[in-house]
Image (cartoon, rainbow, N blue to C red; front, side, top):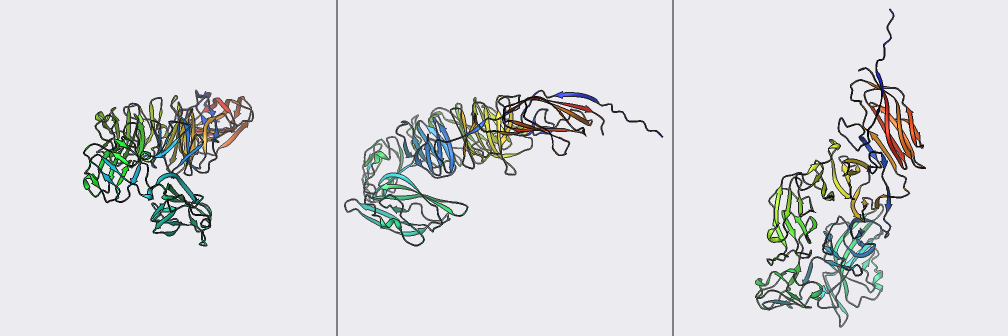
Length: 632
């Protein structure tokens, strides 16, 4: 029997994409959206184009930068050294940092240090907290004042030092429980001396111990042989010594580097000048007095070299035999920000605010508009972030927002809203662009304008991210995240077009924007300037979501029509696949114009296209020729 030949009645037509769009990882994604991409920018939308180059920060040679911040100038923390506009200004411990500027004091948290930038020619480095301990039996109280002689062991503060021990020897320090120095005889008195070996040991009891310095100001140290090369030098006869403030170590490939941080003092000065430690208006805590009624919180009304004056009838008059301590304390806070010229922060269930213009004062309660402020909240869960926004300061939890309004303590009021909050561990994701606050929550990325936050990351589908770190320029929201597999993604949200792109797998530790340029500090310790005109040849790729032609029939693709421009030295590759098959390269070139690219015919349900290349290339349009056939 003769069989009749089956006729192919499918229709042949061409389909042109209206525009290229951003990422869409949902099922049934729209035509022109991307399943994956890298190295792209939305600057020329709807044309498919590449991101700008990345410049390198070269103001100062860096070794291990761990934090950056921008306020008038770029600030960089490099291996414990703090740089302001490329100049070394002080030392803090390594690790995660938060920054806030109150008035002209740039506060560094959690170290409790500040840099006064009022005079760019004479920057002042200081501590928000302060402690003075009187020599035992030296305190004299009147009804309004306290006069003290300070302990020789707490002489005039000098510089903060950092010493590293970075070879394979067994390093030791000679430490003491107490030291004092007699300026007349130039003799040291040191008690409780002990030779301590540096080790990877969290319980190593070093903090608070004293170190006598050598003539050249180095730490007293001994190595494995027991010899101490520094002891061959003359002992320091000026009375300089150090108090250890912290101790840490970093494991290298073949050895361990130990770090010892210490504050140095001039022990030749018996009395600390109180005017260099405290100021009028400071709220202090007086403790250790034998007369219990003299142990209290009070506000300083006047200060001289050895006397602090307070309000009338505050103390029981008389000499005190104890070692009285005067402290200006700053509360421990998990997150900080500046709002209305105050330093705000949170810890556990308490919200704190400093006195007006005084980030060092959290204990001033005079009933004035300039007072400090504190209030407890009753909601469950830990705070996850703090930020200023418009006329308020926002205190975030994962499912709650506390919003502080008001201009003075008397009318501060904390409102509570049950909304999608900031994801724990994503406190660095908050950025404001054109009065819109963007942040990362547990269910995605949100935009907040004062009402209920709106999720803007539905295109990620079921993908989950965490560890958000963000930066921004005038229209782009840069977000570095980790996925559930621990892989890193640098995502960019175009706030003008409402589209997401993925740049690459760079993991950001912190961002800072200075003069409209976004600086990225990578996890590897490099500082990049984003979207720069540079000689970098950017590698890029764009995988389009599969074409299905909105029909259930099988399809056969035969040609692609591609219109593009490529600059000199750039090249581009086109790959295709049918259904779940393998990618096949069908064209590679470096010419501009329109290319007609044949496709090996193959019936399929869906058809995917991937474009990639290196160098400056703009893809203006993509057309496909397809024939729709039967269901099998």
